[in-house]
Length: 120
View 1 (cartoon, rainbow, N blue to C red):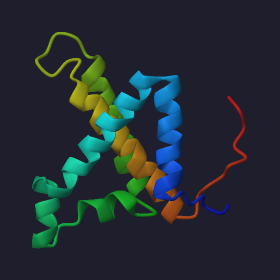
View 2 (view 1 turned 30 degrees about the horizontal axis):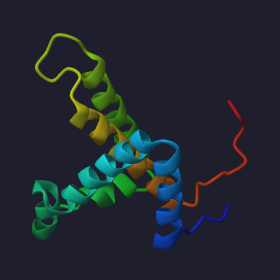
View 3 (view 1 turned 120 degrees about the vertical axis):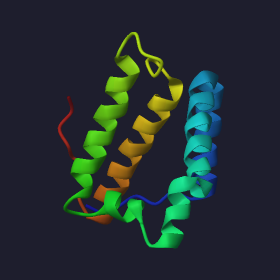
View 4 (view 1 turned 180 degrees about the vertical axis):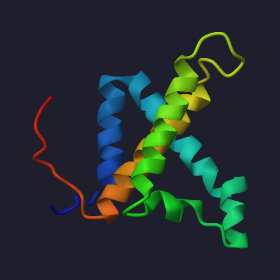
């Protein structure tokens, strides 16, 4: 299956449409984008200077899927768990979404796209 390509203008137009129809959804998307953007200068990005490329591991065709699924489950579990100082934190939803995006990117790079998946 061929991957879809979106220009910045295409994405901007879609976001403007979403903002018109559901402003809070657009706000949430903006928060996720800001979170992801912040990771390009965080401690993990700095690890690349030392030869540790964690994103390469996440995008790996063979092992990345397991890492990404684990991280999505980990942050979702931490979010829904009650009674701890890390329960219900918005940042965990951001991290969960980020790892889900890593998995989508891994599938794009591995050529594992199927736009004819069955409806559920």
